[in-house]
Length: 237
Image 1 (cartoon, rainbow, N blue to C red):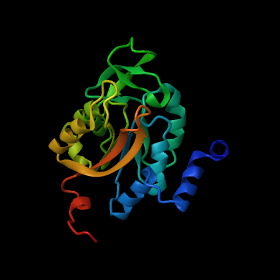
Image 2: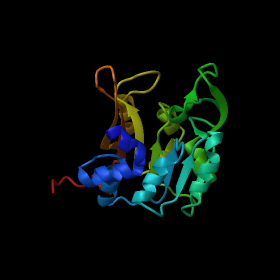
Image 3: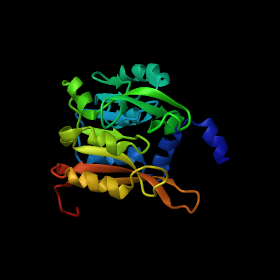
């Protein structure tokens, strides 16, 4: 019965029904909590947008916030360009985010697509890459304070590519690995880097559990800049 309903009902509708019937602490619920806590995005970067599902999720919480939709896969460009037209000020960046500008190898794997070190690593193509610093410099009218990166383990180089501009973000959402599978940074490494940049953990959203033993493998982590009003209070209620 469950599998039949999954096939008949769209994902967004299923999630909406679950939130009405149960307390579901998924991405949408935690973004809504961020809004309730007083956060007001001036602009959002969706790094690793793929089909733009997360951008749509953001617009479900903050309908008019402009988004930079960053995705290098050529096959996704038409759909993302159409999506960007939904909110004024939004635009598509058809590049990968990296530590430096240039050309990089990009493995093709649907939602698992990402930068790799060698072209021989499976089915790969060459794509243009840019840094967050360059992206922001090329769009001076765009003033984002919310950064999301889902780059299949390449989040740390992309963060380093922001340079001092990382400080303009009040909230940073990162996909991180609790268990290291493959050549990816661990949560502790990501946390240490963000601490060094003046950020702290604000919220976590468990995502995937390892089939081997049921251990938490990956989670989404919201980091907040230390001077943000979101972390100013020490009160309980």
